[in-house]
Length: 171
Image (cartoon, rainbow, N blue to C red; front, side, top):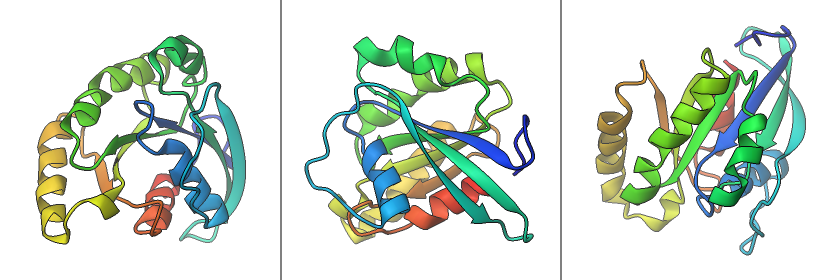
């Protein structure tokens, strides 16, 4: 995917309620490390990583970690503007965190209407292996209205699907 603003830079935001694992997902991707007691993000911050896409082109990802607490939502919303990709995180198997994404989607779409949407059920290591397909089906049903959304189950703790989430965001 080429940025709507620069062909070599892509702005990516991770969005969702507090405690869903946004920071851990980023850390697992960038550092291949999982920290059990990650502090709550209080203000948005970003990291960068350059990757080579499947077509051989290079792109620099600016990965923004946003605060999920309600009292920080107005501040986080400022950082949604001009985003190319939004990764919406919810806890796999937690219906409340999944339903909350509809409000987050509205906030992101108000600031970046052309933003590509990716949904990630985090903490997949906490659900039974035979429940994975049910969780994906539930997510597909919930988010089908958002024009062919990409949906992943991922675990920052085990590294499961973490690379695939960010790779899909770049392609």
